[in-house]
Every structure is written in structure tokens, then in C-alpha cells.
Image 1 (cartoon, rainbow, N blue to C red):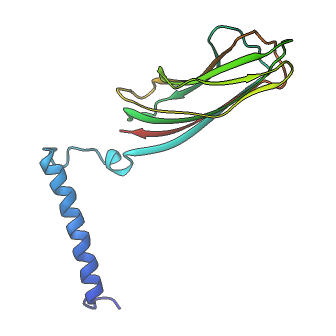
Image 2 (cartoon, rainbow, N blue to C red):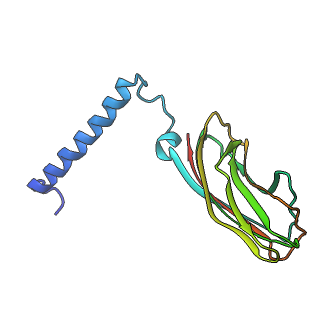
Amino acid sequence: MAGAPPVPDDIYALGRRIAALETRVNLLTNRQIPLGSLPNELLAAPVEPDYATALRENFALGASWVSILDLNLTVPEGFASVVLIAQANLRVENTTAGDNLLLAEIILAGDQGAAAVDYRGAGATMALWDLQHSTLVSGLTGGDTVTCTIRGLVAVPVTASVGNEARLRVTQIWFR
């Protein structure tokens, strides 16, 4: 009913909201950020989640580290840092006549993850499932490019094969 006094539950809820607001004001005051100095867009969306995926198939691989797959992310306007959480799968057919070794890693904005390894006999599929790496990248400006890479090598070079596949998924949490 319009104009009716609030019931006690509403008063308690209002009290909790006022206390929460007071806490936020105290945090801003203690950090000596002048009230009104932050633009509304910063307050409205200080964090922006996103994700991107990439796939590459039918590639050859040699005995030196090479980029198998690059995924370039563009920094959104107004954001200065990002947490990157990457997951990759890599499958390579051993087209050699003998045993072979596959090494691979994820590199996020130059930050190198741990290498993973698989070893298989002639004609077998070498596979690295669920490689993971995460990092924080700061000092960014809107429009910058952040590169995420799967790179790898084999002990004995393999030829391109339709069974060779690299997949990369990068979850991004952008901060202003």
C-alpha cells in the first residue's frame, strides 16, 4: 500500500543496505579517492568477462619450437589488465617409422607455461589433453593486442596430417 510505513523487516533490510553503502564510502575515503572522481562507466562495469577459441588442423611439426596456433585478443577500450585462463588440446599423428616424442606448452602474453610431453610409437597418435596455464597481464591500453599461443616440437619431424589438431580456449577477465 502506497504511503504505508515500512514494516520491521523492511527497516532491517534498509539498515543493512545503509551499512553496506557506508562501508563502500569508507573504502573510497580511506584510499583517498575523491568522491565523484570515478566516471560512471568505471563504477557500472569494472570487470568484463569474455572468452575466445581457436582451432588449427592438418599441420606439420618439426624438431624446433614453433608456434602451432596463435590467438590474438584485442584489449577493450577502458581496460588496463586481464586475467587469462587458457586450456589447450593437441593431437599429432606420428607419421615417422619409429618412436616419437611430442612437447607442447601454452604461452600467454609472453608468460610461458609448463611443458607437457607424450611419447608414442610409429603410426600412433600423440596427444596432450587439457594443457592449462593462467596469468595476469597489466599495463594494457585499449586496442593493444594480447597474444596467446600453443607452441610445440617433436623429436623427429612429422608431416602434415588431417589428424593433427590444436585447440585453444582462453577465458578472459578484463579489469579497468
